Image (cartoon, rainbow, N blue to C red; front, side, top):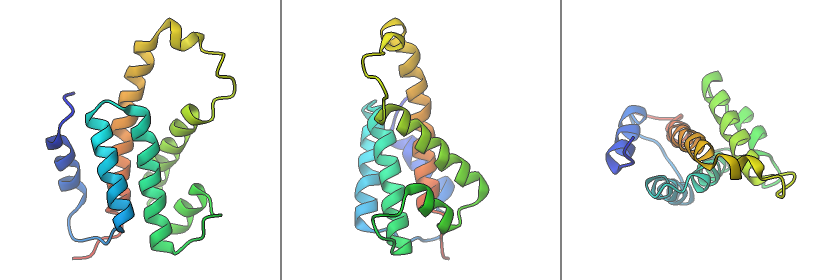
Length: 140
């Protein structure tokens, strides 16, 4: 897949059918996620997509910082499908952020291309999840 602005525009066109209110922070993060994806910075995509969704939910729910991402997703009332997608994003992000033993890197040394390919898929799915989440509560 060629990473392009056209792909990103297609995602927004697919999910944004009416209007939605998104905070400037969420918009800023979403734009950064898009730039990261186009630049093949896939771990950054995972981080920023989750941050954009979390920021959006905090804005919508007026939730304090001590509430977890999972709590925000559950409280907001996403569809069951979107809840599964956000959970997959959270787990993928956590796999790269919360490494138990950074010295246990044999898998990366032995087959880095395999992990890059998996990350590329996860990053693309994360973008779609982010766009879907930001467009979840639309008005016409």
